[in-house]
Length: 377
Image (cartoon, rainbow, N blue to C red; front, side, top):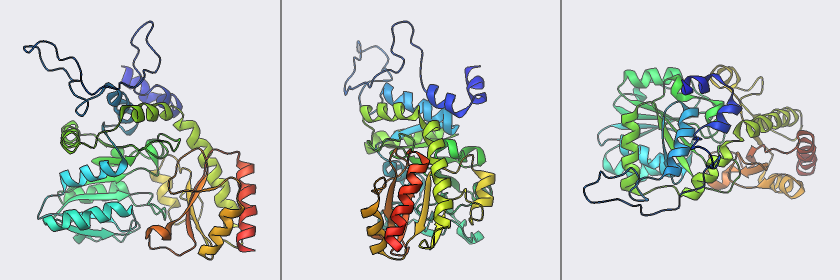
């Protein structure tokens, strides 16, 4: 009955109350982190408790896993980082003699892991741009198809429901990297995906002060296998970081609303500026992703991209801006900008990904326009 009630309420209510447990009078509203490596086991004949060693279980993990699982619509397993979550998923599900399909324009470390660790073990690695085309041969013999939609950094979008059907018809599982969209922006499990993976260092925790990741699945057996892989691999999250992320999750709805408002205003202003070569944001009418994103996503989020004429122009932009920091993360309170060619992405030297923060919209737009004039004038 509680679960039915929670799925009927709004996003803000869900974020504030997700994973919280009423332990009675005198208990804290939001329990602190359990910082324990060892637990009392009781007499030798007693059943082994759920919490018996800090690498295997922790009540702080379970609280955040319950919260994220409620938002994702599945069973969640936390990891020490987003990349730890991706690595565990790939290593568990990519079998020798099968193939894995990865986004050619997605997170570069996922491709590097597949090429340098999975391929030598006999896993065929296939790459495809998020926007496609997606020929049928891509799915033949695949054990896992990983999507990243919207992609990072170009923000292309692909049809999760269609590709899930095609993957399942070929006998493959389909996973979606949902870091950019967040559970409030998009619910891949409801669209047919088998797994959702994300870096919770970004918008979900929202304060740019921790490293964390997770995988969610609607299949409890599959989630259990991932939890076993976490225990064996040792990529466990710290309880303090977990507690901070749960605290940050409470304001996700509020933060996303301001970030999306800022991204919309910036995308419009950037599109009208003569010094900007290209602007991408799924919520921008006329964007190549707009039509599909409008059907598939619940919110468009605060991440956008655009291109300046040169690397030097990016430097002038950053030197002039008072509000936009040079940083390689996104989803935090403060706006930042990242020139992606420095990390090896196949983009122009002036291509940047921008994360719109929670500043006042008028202040942020004015600062960006001032900086653009200095960079391209």
